[in-house]
Image (cartoon, rainbow, N blue to C red; front, side):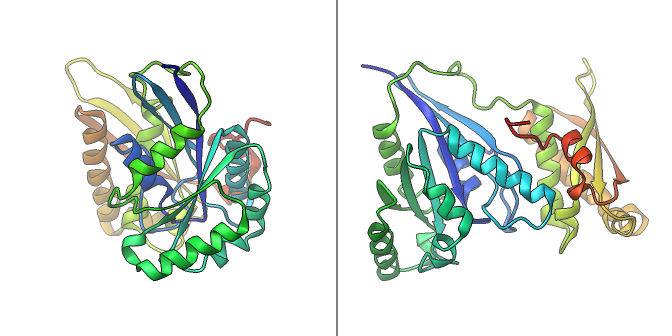
Length: 302
């Protein structure tokens, strides 16, 4: 039996469940998930391998109209990931967009759907928060567009119908040798996932603009024999006024952030760590090309 291998890009508006779906396919947590939009900033690669196939999933930032340079970079990641894909998994959240209008009328979505080379599957997510009649109406509407090769209702959170999605993906994947060894689930280094875990805890613990004004940089990551690993991380904010909010009264907020981050990092790495957090101000970093480049926000074209 021939081996099938290929790239599957997961796309959609912010907060539709892309990262939850990736984690469901892999059976472990690679992408951070919160109930806030714009959680994913870079594309994250997760690899599902068996004896007969290898699916390389790309989780991407939510499709939105950019307000500043960071969001422009995020949108570039989406377009680049679409071009790299053999199959597109396009997700619509029926609970927030029951008629699909917000999604299908979006300019950037229309541009992506105009790419003709890939097989396109649309997943109607969060069907557990809707009802059968609404799901059928949306399926009918999506069918009439002629844009999709498959339309599948799912609940990424409950793992409902994800087996059916995988079966359809395998139908569309080309025959190709595996791109990666079977034991590799992700190609990003540990320090990338550590920075994402800290950022996830910031999204959970802080409100309003703070989580979106923050970048996490791992300054040092030392594995120490016979001692806890040392991780030193900087939390970068855009304004001086944001620094005391992150730190909290007498350091209470950053202490809680450090504790929750350390526990999650230890669960991910499966070993004890010593975590040091500090807060730095980099004025308007989200709109500064040099800061963005230093934080790793580059595309294949750069």
